[in-house]
Amino acid sequence: MNALILRLVCGLLFSVLVLGAIVKPPDNFSQGLGMLLPATMLLGVALKGPRRSIIPKRSAPAPKAAPPPGG
Image (cartoon, rainbow, N blue to C red; front, side):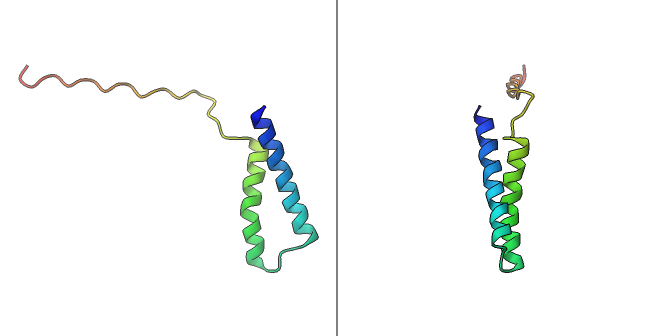
């Protein structure tokens, strides 16, 4: 449920950003590039959802104790 809400919010923010760029285009090229980075990040989260590993992580094995010297 949490992931669905996050995807919906990011999709809504992306659409607002795009509509804002259409209604009032950026004044120069650097402003357009500045809007491009957050837009791509929002679109990525809206399409893919939050990053989660499907395969559960294994805990690291305990280091083996070294044999005592001279024994």
